[in-house]
Length: 226
Image 1 (tube, rainbow, N blue to C red):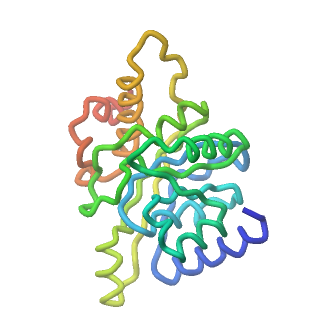
Image 2 (image 1 turned 180 degrees about the horizontal axis):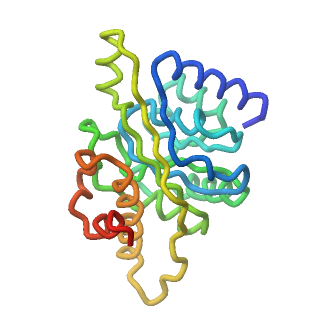
C-alpha cells in the first residue's frame, strides 16, 4: 500500500474504532518496524481485519480476504485499495500462495485466521493448516494474537443499545516453526504446527474462549510455562 494511502486508511480505521468503543492492545510494543512475519489470530467478527491497521503503523500489512467476498464490489474495491489479496479457503490456490510468499519474502506482514471462518460462539474452532503452511514455507516468524470483544453478535447488540465496544487484542511472543521435516509425514507435521499456533492463541484467551483447544496437551504445557 502506498504510504499516503496507508496514512489515510489507518486514520479512518483508528477514528472509527475510537468512536465505536475502547480498544485495548497488549504485547505489540516489540513488533518490528520492518521485516516479514505472519499475524495469526482467532476469527470472531468482521472487525478483526481492521485491528492490525489500528495497532501497527506499517504500510506493508497484507489483508487476506476470503474468496467469497470477491463477488462484492465494495470488498473488491477495498481489497485493491489496501493492496490485499483474495484466497480460496477450501482449495489449493497456487496463485494466491505464490503471491503471499512473495509478499512475505519482500518484508510484508501477512494476517491470517487459521480457523478459516468466523466463530459465531466466539470460541476457538478447529483450524486448517493452510495459513500455517505459508508461514512455515516462508520461514518467517509468527505472532499469535487473541481477540475478544469484536464478535459480530456482540458488536450488533452493544451498538443497538448505544453501548461502546470493549475490544481487546493481546499479542504473544514471536516464534518460528522448525524448517526441517525430512523423514516425517508432512501432513502430520503441518497439523502439529497448526496445533502449536492455535494453542499459543488459546493461551492468550480467557479460559471460556479456548474452545476446541481447551483440553489440548500443548496448551497445558504453555500455561505451565514450558
